[in-house]
Amino acid sequence: MDLTGQHILSSDQFDLETLDALYDTADLLVSVAKGRQLIRILEGAVLASLFFEPSTRTRLSFDAAFMRLGGAVSHTTGVVFSSIMKGASIADTARVISGYADVMVIRHEDENAIVESAQASLVPVINGGNGAGEHPTQALLDLYTIRSEFQCLGREINGSRVALVGDLKYGRTIHSLIKLLSLHQNLTIVCVSPPHLTCPQVYLDLAAKAGHRIEICADLCTGIAGCDLLYATRIQAERAGEDVLNLAGSGDFRITKAKLNAYCLPHCVVMHPLPRDSRLGAQDLAEDTKADPRLAIFRQSDSGVPVRMALFAHVLGIAKKIAPSLKNSVWSSK
Ligand code: ASP
Image (cartoon, rainbow, N blue to C red):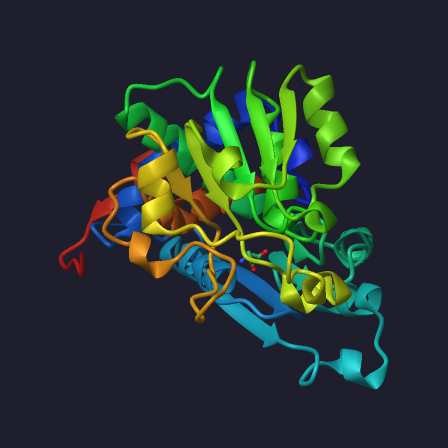
């Protein structure tokens, strides 16, 4: 599918052929993301970056991606400093800002806000996270990482056992990732969460309809045993409200070094969209896992820049012009 001029709202917009093309472009841009090569192909272009919810990785990696392609970024963060505080609708806001920019990235707590923005916008809108809905660009970089980790291990994604762990109800990265994983074949997807934070049925149905086996498990050690991919997530306390208060007594979901060693295979790939909750006693991926070579979390976050660069290149219709426009850098920080 040609992504030129398209809004990127959900990961169900992608098929394997489109992903292959996107990832080929991302591969070409890894050296640019690291500063070893330069490209000014988006010189003069403006990205409007509208993050109405907290963000570090997504916002900064979108910025870095656009700037490393030669474009400039114009921001607003939070609702406090935006005209939304004066009662402006998201549709009006998106229409106005689309008159200033060539593409927009929006994150908003309201699940419908990105679609409403896209309907009003004159330029492509990219979903940077819509409440507990989706986070399609995170899923794009997650699958890029999964492909590269599995390739290094000489393994196939098809046929693998995937454990999705943590807050599967409010964790939007999970919702988008399930859609991309479902494009593969013969997976066993184990949803490991406290019973009240299990994955919404709509995503489970989608995976089951695509022919994958779904297992629901409320015990961490049983759920992660023997998996090829462990994708951990943070409890989304800002969304989960009472569900978080109910967490006490729903089991131990802290993924520690000892549990990885006891239950996970030597080739298991361990991922997390970040941030992980590193506070004492948090039900998340523990810091004592940091020396484990199976931990791919920082290779995963590093993929954010080349994958988002590739997405801009495809949405703005310049992907084919990249290879001839690359120049070697006279400096390099990495
Ligand atoms: N950064 C991811 C998101 O925005 C994951 C998280 O916040 O837990 O959804």
